[in-house]
Image (tube, rainbow, N blue to C red; front, side, top):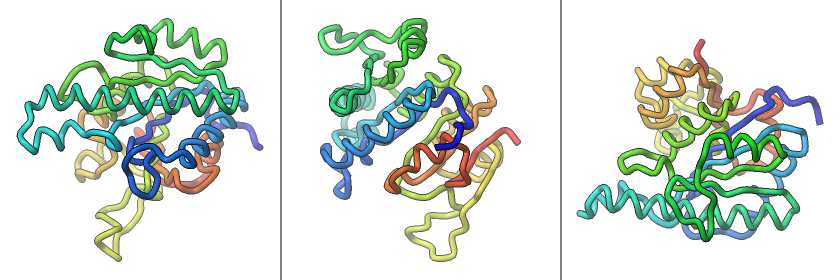
Length: 239
């Protein structure tokens, strides 16, 4: 494997990706493959952290749309990310990859509290760090949590693992003439209203000149390809 382009990465993966084809629950085969790929990247000496969503279990925005109080729904969504984080931690440890689970909401029996210096120290020791419970606040998505944590720990890039092979000018599932971008700036993505991340997360990345690589997680080996800087997916960069 060639030398990695990035020495410190944060992988953002939606909860739906852990659900496999169904998009719900946790698919053991998908989880096992994801853990194996993360271990391979960590084996390159790359400082690796993960922010994981909870949409395969519960989405706060969906709950609010169905009449639930938005703050309560968001807290339930944060707890769903903890469930996924525990599942991913278990999968990583089964492939002998040392891992720490850090939460923005106190639950000391199962997770360590998120402390920036502690997270960095875990990475110094070669551990994969999984951040769960979002930012700990309602009204913020796990995309924003990923942008915030990446900036805090000094990650060089956010690797956004999705079910599509990049960013398109329109929904490729609905439009045959959709065009994929190889590269786009944060500002252009915001101006076009592209579904890269939510506007808060994208603005935070732009302010911190933090690039984002959007790629298809369903293609085996794509995490390592993104780390090596191979031309996959779409790169969102300052210029």
